Length: 404
Ligand code: SF4
Image (tube, rainbow, N blue to C red; front, side):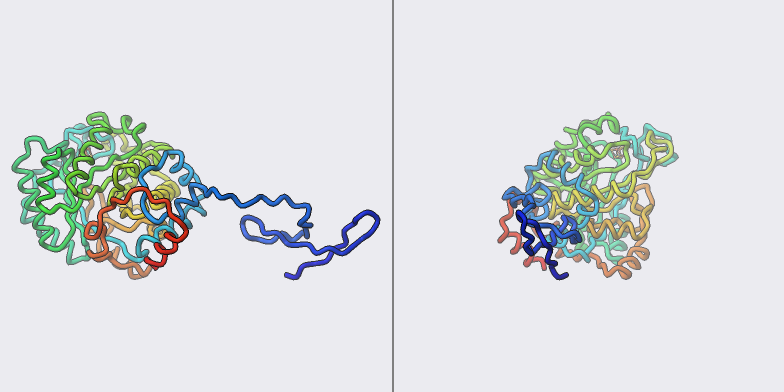
């Protein structure tokens, strides 16, 4: 739009002066002509905000403070989702979604009191405890998963820990080696493990070990009382020290507050190295458990958590886990847009329902998504061990062009 000439009084004279249209912060144009000489122009600051730093990141950093993560988390959702999407595209191919299948290799009868879990022996959920599955049946299930596009096969057992489970561990190791021989990533979740057991699993070829911290340190005691947050972190430490990738995340909808989502992300993003995988579960309330009647978490909180995790842990695979089957397709796509890049797919996910392979293939087709190839997964590439990276503009350019 052309600039207009206005008459401005100087003393008794009226002289024509040129005025400018000023941009608003949200990029529309002021339609009232303003004299620039009367404007207070704020000088550009050399200090970038935490949000801007996260947006410009060229790599992972592990020195996040809670306040910094809260600042990212509390950014308006429209800005946060856009920024998370930009970060996601810098570090990942947004079309590639890792397909994983999770099999329960030993169901129920667990001595722990996790108040969301159908497999705890403390609650009457109608679930029948089973013995451990045979190695052959597990490998057959892995073969089927691979044929359907899954590149990662996860195996879960409802145990508190692996103490005194020598035969069980031997069988799990055979399963791990068998899954790896199929050319898939292998992940297990067996409860707490010590340093020696972690080394044995590493020697068997284990790609990743799942051990969720579930929620923030503060909210944790109102969800689980039979093992501490620090015990969980000790297992994660054993896994990391054995050179196995860590898969650790949380469950949203356990009666927590927004600050607990911040606390959860803070815990995992300040580990010595970011987890390779961050699963985001939405509670599926199970009748008979203490959280069986809990109201489901709102979608904006799920989206905000995923977007924040993406900005804080740019390289990590973010895994849309339990509860995905309750989300409409459009909501799942929004999660992929802001950084989620893995799903559990198959017949079942532990004891809860799961989106089936055919359903996921059709969704991928509609939206131009594709299963992540093995060579693209972090489990097969590098470990996330880089420490703090304060990106310079040159590094940002390099990182952006490298992934373009
Ligand atoms: S979540 Fe795991 S440890 Fe907790 S009760 Fe369920 S099976 Fe046991």
